[in-house]
Image 1 (cartoon, rainbow, N blue to C red):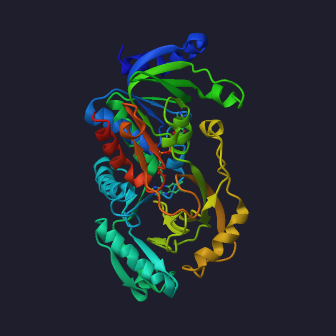
Image 2: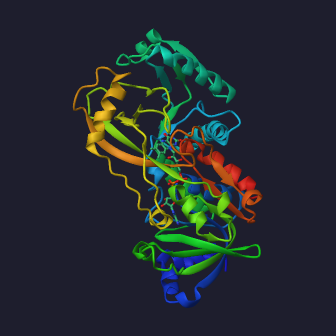
Image 3: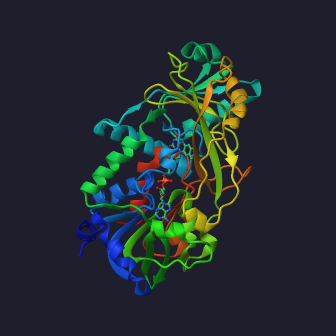
Length: 421
Ligand SMILES: Cc1cc2nc3c(=O)[nH]c(=O)nc-3n(C[C@H](O)[C@H](O)[C@H](O)COP(=O)(O)OP(=O)(O)OC[C@H]3O[C@@H](n4cnc5c(N)ncnc54)[C@H](O)[C@@H]3O)c2cc1C
């Protein structure tokens, strides 16, 4: 039976997995075409690409009760130009390609977005050479329209801004990422993709060239402790698997029996908190304002919602390591501690000196899945296929941090090509 029919018949009432629960001693096996693990913006874009442009039957397994609840809804919603990344890197290439695809897609599908442009600002003389470096790097990456601005011009554009020089990036913008995901998901579904929520991939094993994916209901997985053995409710036998599990991608891969653990990168987690500006009648900024990048992030910047609400963030807070079971159970701490505001005020006042006391309120937090630790410098996206891990039909996506939202459609294109579908 084709996966779409199977899923429509059974999964729509979630009967399939319920039926399977009683069969633990010999878990049910089902052959499927493609499985995407994780319904974040990247997993959804991959599912859309495979089903729409390659006619594949895709089953997306998502541990949460809805799509896009991970990093994809906990970010700055900025469409990046592609300035910061080394020219030959995947981040550099996918950001530029992804941005172009994204703007085109937004126009065609009516996704709310605004190409408002961005100013990267130097507030001290020592920072000016860094702006020149970013200008050169952006030019090498093919970012259109970059231009150095004197302080007077930048401050005329943004009267609340204080800087000594700025780099103007006219192609940067903002997007309603939920609308984007909803649209990509709708297209994927109408081309045969099925989204299966509340189910978690807990492992895999390999027999010959066949992948056996172990899937259990999330409710059951959440009850497991470190000592209980995880029995899958069902074994899926897919031809293709894309591990797009975001923060949990490395933990998921480590639960694949038979994969060389040496190919799975270490994961580090860096939380980034946002604070909103208490509403003012007129928002103080009309463009994105970014300081010079810091270790682990792009600096506490100004971003705007499509309704003009200003927020500042994200900062960088390296978190303690998390074990694989907790990672798969999605035990990540997104708390925004109100005290962190005290660190935000001096950072923001470097470029926005008139920021008033007590004007920041806690917003939300996101967590970056990083493949290099504190002080280790640039690390690229890792898109890992058979040539690295030796397993036909499996692609692992590791370290898909910023600019993952901007790059999502380009990553999807690349993954489909890598799978030679
Ligand atoms: C603070 C912050 C700011 C950012 N700002 C920007 C920005 O402005 N612009 C930009 O381009 N990018 C930005 N990014 C990066 C961007 O948000 C991410 O790269 C992108 O959302 C990653 O999408 P994803 O689908 O890979 O991961 P996610 O959105 O995390 O999705 C992964 C999904 O997998 C599911 N899952 C996990 N484990 C399992 C399992 N075992 N079985 C089944 N499902 C599982 C999760 O529930 C989740 O839904 C930012 C990121 C952060 C953290």
